[in-house]
Amino acid sequence: MPTPSMEDYIEQIYNLMESKGYARVSDIAEQLAVHPSSVTKMVQKLDKDEYLNYEKYRGFILTPKGKKIGERLVFRHELLEQFLEIIGVDEDKIYEDVEGIEHHLSWHSIDRIGELVQYFKTDKTRIDDLRKMEHEK
Image 1 (cartoon, rainbow, N blue to C red):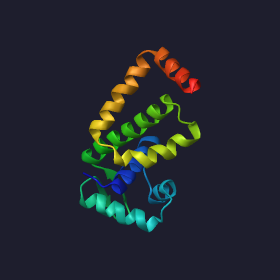
Image 2 (image 1 turned 135 degrees about the horizontal axis):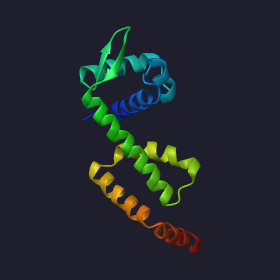
Image 3 (image 1 turned 45 degrees about the horizontal axis):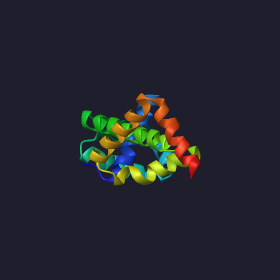
Image 4 (image 1 turned 30 degrees about the vertical axis):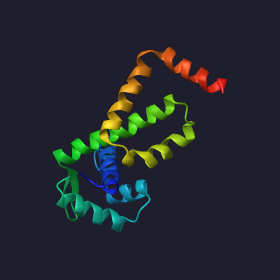
């Protein structure tokens, strides 16, 4: 399994490739607020661990293994955003909170959160009831 740092890079590479069709070192560095040299080192490590194929001066692409992990990481991130929104976390705090917790939850916990999100989404009155509970405090 990739480390939390590796996950951040894979997730970012996956998002860039999905949105732009490619991911450049400079784009990744900007998104993760790190130096391009740090990105290059991580890209080399991800290549060594077979999450992507890297060719110096040519770029890189995610391997099937890297793409599968990227999809799961994006799913996890989006699911946690939905969960925090449902439970009433302020919108301006959600992204930062997700970044803070996403690497600390097991996939079993993520699956349970997914079931809870589905529970609330299948009947919008449940979200309304939750909001009422917040206001009763």
